[in-house]
Length: 344
Image 1 (cartoon, rainbow, N blue to C red):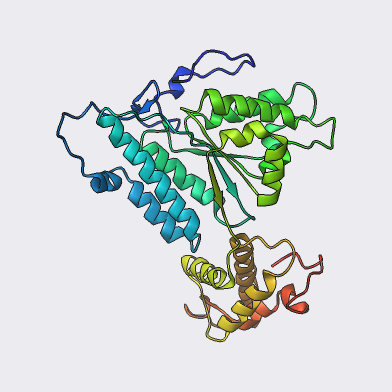
Image 2 (image 1 turned 180 degrees about the horizontal axis):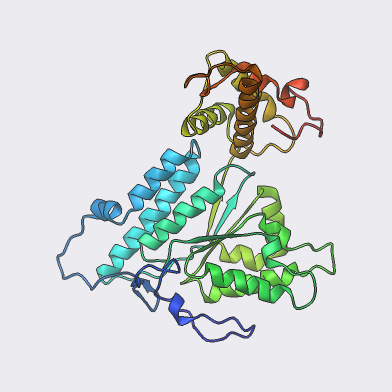
């Protein structure tokens, strides 16, 4: 277990983080002895374990199934998560048999554009790690440069340590992690945040998993500037852009969850919208689709109020072609790249 004493940079591990869920749950036995992550006593010689049942009972299968239901596409990411979950479960079983089961490095990098489900996946990963006993809690703390980096000397360390304290016991998700370090600005204090982060990732990895995220090319450049960070990341997951068909399905699902649907005439218009929008600047995949749907709902509401008269359940639930065609996306050719087209 990592030491709970003060480090050279003054970071302490409060004892209550070692065995209690920050959300207020009952004490959780993490079962970490030396390098071993396991729960329960050793199994007797000749014992057997129904590993598929453990996968179900611990809630790993449920978490992964929920991820399948929540996120469309991302086949490679989902498969990688299943593999990580399976490895950790087998390690747990090995420890019960008295076999060597060193605690693995669980820090991760999620590389990909915005709106591709990185935060959602991190949330499910936290649930799986908690279910397997690798983390005391399943909570996720998200942070950005503003949360970690100060604006003057002596400001960064307290900010960074405060975020780490909130995340301890669970998962810390740092979006656009490359923004922490700005080597072109000699008065930037981001490197101090990176150094503190590196220390905690190493010394307290039994109690904290760090997920850094951002665009692939920028993350690669960030790792080049901070090789110590790259060496502490064990799992690199790529989140690709959603294809048009998946984005259309995502839109349908979002509408259904809110009690809306596209009219028959609006279906091809929405497909055309998605095809055009994904070719324009500042496209953020599912996030942009969500914004587009919000705008369509507002246009629908304005249309109904302006028309007056009686409305029924169907009329307040249907998105019509004009609710989508009013978007600025249709004011330019499909391949437009003008920077003015930034909204849904």
